[in-house]
Length: 215
Image 1 (cartoon, helix red, strand yellow):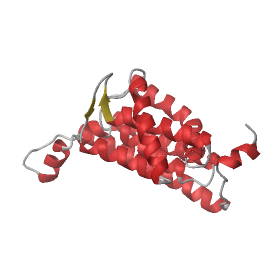
Image 2 (spheres, rainbow, N blue to C red; image 1 turned 60 degrees about the horizontal axis):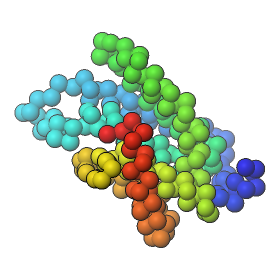
Image 3 (cartoon, one colour; image 1 turned 180 degrees about the vertical axis):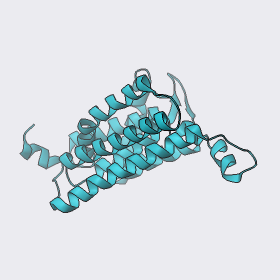
């Protein structure tokens, strides 16, 4: 698909080099901070006598931040609100690179082990993230390609945020439901678009749940 056709879906914005570099550095730092935070939750020994420890245990934040859903939402928001598909690709790659690097380093330095096999999967996600981020950026555009992308993204989030089988849908928890609402809000354009995306996305998720590594 040539540039002219892509611009019919969504027109890239303009941004100076300095601001572009600052945003790129910012999302990398945010990724590092969240990766370190996730590892801290893994290593934290919970004490029921401390109120914020009880909060972490109640919402199972350690497992939540080790799961896909919250990272998918962060990547989606970064991609959609980037100035162009190219910027979306760079920004999301920087975010995942920072998150994976900090999580891996903290595991070695503070966790006392090297989760190499586990991290290989996340490094694979990082390598794929620029392509997927560009698709997410176009999902916020106009026309049939944007609608198809929008439905696909909603289907992925439905599979990530709910337990879905051939004949059932069940909640995984409040935080996962909020992630799904957040994804729908990021992609929102019109009430009609939202209704179509939710209906078709959930229908598609019944197929995707058999193949995606969620749940």
